[in-house]
Length: 540
Ligand code: J2J
Image 1 (cartoon, rainbow, N blue to C red):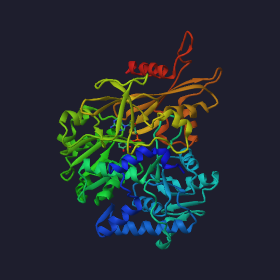
Image 2: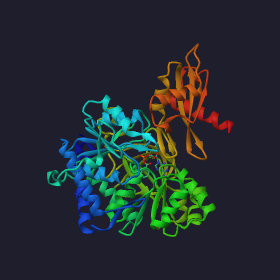
Image 3: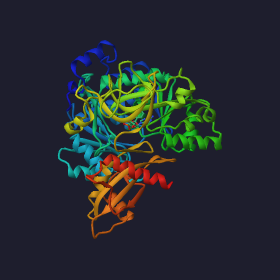
């Protein structure tokens, strides 16, 4: 397991403790304390189910003790792939209680991603919901188990097929649970959207993540009366921590789980459950705005609509308060750490035109040109950052670490931003090859590699194209091998057969006879992408 001193060097760790950012809190203690302070208060609502803090705590302890009884040891990893169901929190907080380290897979992930995440983290167990949107995750988990040594247990929430264990049967005596973990140890592995290859694993510690919850709560006005509607997947870092579900638990509030992001359903839930805050990606926010104009729903309880995960354009941002009657908060965050928020006291111009400023005064932000020199405020540059909740290394990935972090521990976010004198950031786009489709991050390189594995493909370049509905869409340019031919539908079938998340399949596939070269040879991948993107835009 990653050694936390590799994530934060000792001198910075000491300073974060001295400044009171890291307070020695842990997730097992957090839930225990909330359950002791207000056992009967509801912490989770899902359909007609309501779990109190005491109920979630008891379920987590029993499940955690059941994991210990299976022979799982503190520090070992447990992969969790579940939708927005209350058992997600039973599994996650149960793993915390057992000292295990959850690894979060998204519901959209398929065999390629699940196998990668389980293998890379050397997971000993996998907990999945039997089916999400009719896809059989239990079957997938069994297939992944067959491929991996050491993945000893497949645990199913719902109907458990042969060879698996039912989540409700994993129960033990809480007396056998280990002592609380070291607050500076790794609490879980989040996953990175990334621009290269499959998702990387992000080691987040109890201390650092809980600081980000506390900081987020203060900026979002979270307290015990807050009701957070979880619309995006629970596993997403935005939904989990900004302030999200974990922030809500920290504040002693209530999480309402939304089974689908459809506005009609969410509006009804919001009115029925007195939702005060929710977070959406921009394409969903647009859907909500359009639906609300038509349906005129009762959103009187909603105080804050957070929008983040991708750039929210000012034209859309301007509509939020008039149409939904609530305050807009823009959120620019990343699972690696840094989260920026617009503030309640910010002017309309800042709320509409920027993606906020960092949570912490000790979030260090650098905006650099390509040569690594600082650019003045108001000019675009590459965003680098370090601070009390931003990692300085991925889990077990030396080559990604060499690319993504500077020697003094700054994370190269890959985002191009303009910083204003107030410290607010305006996101300009990506400096590297990531497609932000509907808020889901796609590595161009990963999709290119998958396309190159087709026998008729000589070269493949995947680029992002601005898209009114999705924010960005993916367009693949394919050069077939000489004398061979293939087409878009064959390539799509090829990608599907590789069992990757459906959102990675390019929206457009164009066949080309070759790619541009210069007199001296190949032009850089970056220039090539720029010119291909420009050629698509010129047609539109
Ligand atoms: C433009 N791009 C944005 C924004 C994220 C809170 C909110 C979001 C995430 C998240 C998160 C953006 N405008 N408002 O973890 O805690 C793009 C950037 C960034 C990448 C990170 C949170 N908000 N982005 O989206 O790890 O490119 O986290 O580097 O999934 O999303 O993606 P992810």
